[in-house]
Image 1 (cartoon, rainbow, N blue to C red):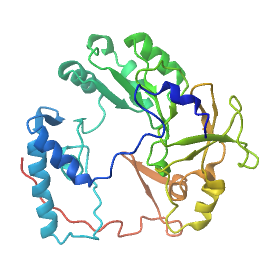
Image 2: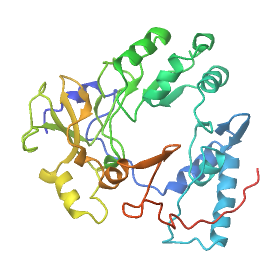
Image 3: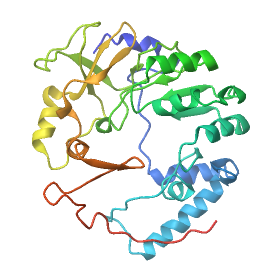
Image 4: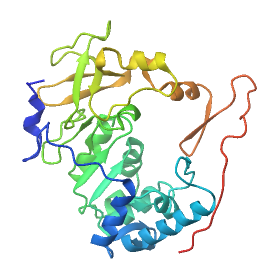
Length: 318
């Protein structure tokens, strides 16, 4: 696509077709950071901080423990842990962790620890602006407020901006796009209701709702479709759903939106529920949600069918 109008809004030095960085093993990211910044804070969990050196040492310790349990190449490991250092030790991150979202604790941590980047979902922003002590905390250290997971209601976005002087920036993606599709450029103006511009190497097209095959011009609403190296190859053992979702060489999201002059604007509704991930669509009907995890009963027995997981446990001391 020669006419990539959104590219003008990329930061200086960034182009749509810029070379992708070489692939590296995931574990090397922590190893190299521990060598380069050994004493930098990797995890801040309430009143306990972990440096990258400590995190790497604990991750190595955990890896040896898994090996003693018989884990090796080809063995799949599922992490079913709370939002605590134990999870990050097994899967790396560099964030301030809370066991669960507590608006006052979040506000206090931003104020005291001078957090510079906040990533949240719309329900979090709603809880923050409605907290009675919101105005008592200094949030000036945050240079980037980001919202994802669902459309941010316009009234929440506007009220947050009136209280802080900052408007949360939104992006767009799905599980099937790992999950990047569009992003908001930090240096550009915030356009309320927009999910930003297509990410590098990503093509966004809006197609007609009747056939799903005809690209529409800017300003016309239709189904948002994505192409790019991050788009999935298909649904596991579900060729029919794969063919439907990837017809025409595009990934059909099932979401409605339109292309503006510079950005993608997303509608707040889905027009075709069958376009959701088939496994998710099955459990959505009658599922229990426990702390964000969907647990569905067997459709015939009306009970949780054991065994869900085969589990092992080991201890970590820090």
